Length: 116
Image (cartoon, rainbow, N blue to C red; front, side):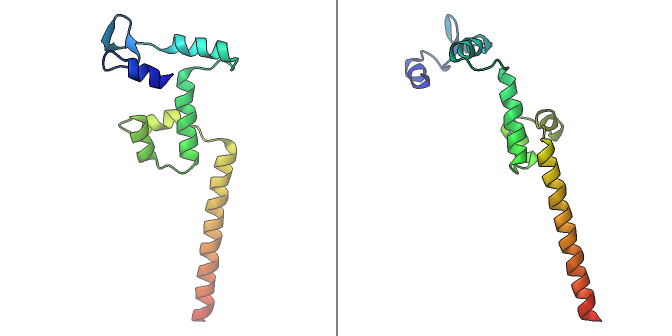
């Protein structure tokens, strides 16, 4: 469908403003709502996809500076409005920190024993 729109575009936009192919469509949510209805997918807002993307990217280890660039944000505070780590991801982060601290303490104790 997108290939057909690209190939048939009369201007710079594949979703132009009705009657003016040189201007961008202002809103596309009505098409989204039609697609949801036709497909039987549960209703959600297009913007929800942005939140989902930001959350999954952050949880998979994408650093916040890169995520800000991907989302088109100029600062990290805006990223924080979109990325919502799940409880399990937060618990994994705490476990990771605890494992790091435990390994660090064990290494320090080993060094201490070698010195004595």
